Length: 347
Image 1 (tube, rainbow, N blue to C red):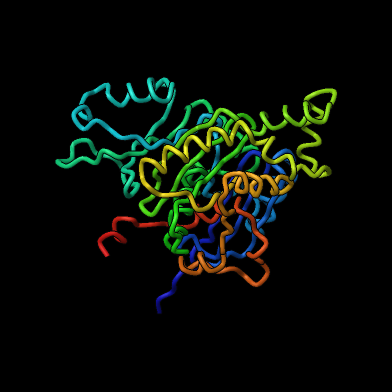
Image 2: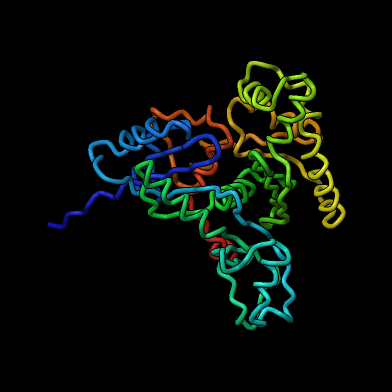
């Protein structure tokens, strides 16, 4: 008599600026069911450690082996058009890193992917693609991230830039929802904003903007005549003051860069941005995504998680309610899903 072992459960963790988002699934491969989800403040280390143990259940004892999405400060996700005449030059990619990204190649770990399907770029191919994505980060930052994960009780069975997981999810959702216009994706943190335009063909544009929440906090301090920046920061993140009417003023620096990006994109492609999605917005700053969308004159994209994941053979347990989940969870669900772009293209 043959016996089959039960599929191994899957564990997925996304660690962004302010929170740790976790999920346990019935299997590590689709079809699967999302059995439980947790959200814990990143600053509360003890609470994160307890949540990790709880998620493990009876198996708790050692590290929780999980697929982890992380966001090192100097993460790199940039689309680049290559000069095909130079791709076989030994220093060409190093030159791109130093001149375009201001990164020292020896201090980084970098992968080059084909923009069309995410496969590894091979300059030796007879017909090399010229549109690629450079992705990676500083080695020291990635090592520090891994040490932090271990401190939290997590062993990164797979370590991935959360940005890539989100981009893959948004591109797939684009096709599922049959969106007719490109989407502007924003990752806003303290000092910068990572901006991406995702169209029907995938990632069209990527740009790092040197303004983030910090630029908004300085405006709060000035406009409300607060004594110091720390007071402004506490008020900004507290959700006790209605900043909605100040949305345009607070986001002025970011908006100026975004309007430039959008204008250039529309001239180059003839397409207009139809919706914006902010995937790292803390719940208390949820109003900010709507403010940005309003100033840009576009819709704020709301993801239908249940229907989209159903199309990926992923369901929710009755104890997990997907309707109340915000855009940050795209990163966790993006870690669960796998997109075979090559197979889809052939089909």
